[in-house]
Image (tube, rainbow, N blue to C red; front, side, top):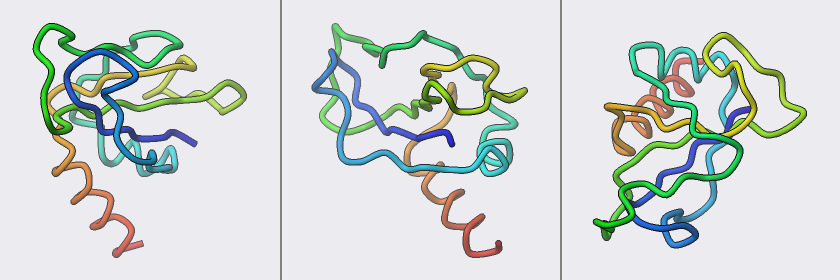
Length: 100
């Protein structure tokens, strides 16, 4: 199952905070269907390493080896979700899980 990470701008490993949030492929489809996803490879990305941020501003999805791929996540590894904020994604998860 995909894992959502909220990441700060900067250089790894200083960009990830806390535990990731595991979501289903169905939840991922519902949350990110309107967003542009950029596959960045099999290692967590450095995001804007020259301009670190104090708080998470990015949404990163991880699909681990052995997990099923899908239309939205065709490759194992990490994706940066464009035009998504941690706050918006958290609200979407809460809304989906309350209604389901």
